[in-house]
Length: 143
Image: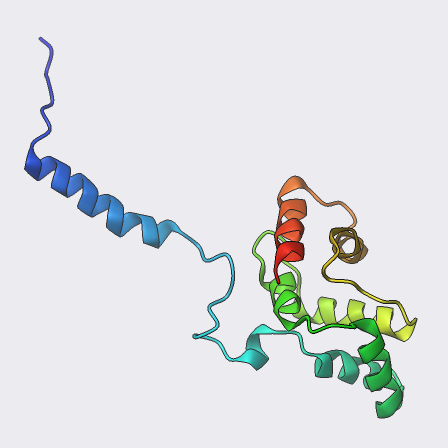
């Protein structure tokens, strides 16, 4: 005997209702919500990198000049996404220390360049998989 399931209006309504309530619960946000977190909590700031350099023994003025040389344009949004992106899983402190090392040796970091971002993340995690590379590509495309 074969049972035939007939979709009624009630069963269709229940399917739509359940799927609409379950989907938002399963979805994870790709990027942090700017309304729920303050700017200081979500972004690696230039001041954090400057403080890392001064803690290594540089004078405040020299550290400030090195950080300005490191980034030539405003990149706070991309800095926040670097350590907040779930596929990259970078620690904020490691990101700050790595940028501080680059600033110490007067290296320029172009966060608009995919190649530059890959090089930066590879200095933290040498072996990158496809998820991490696609996450870096998304960050590079941000404006």
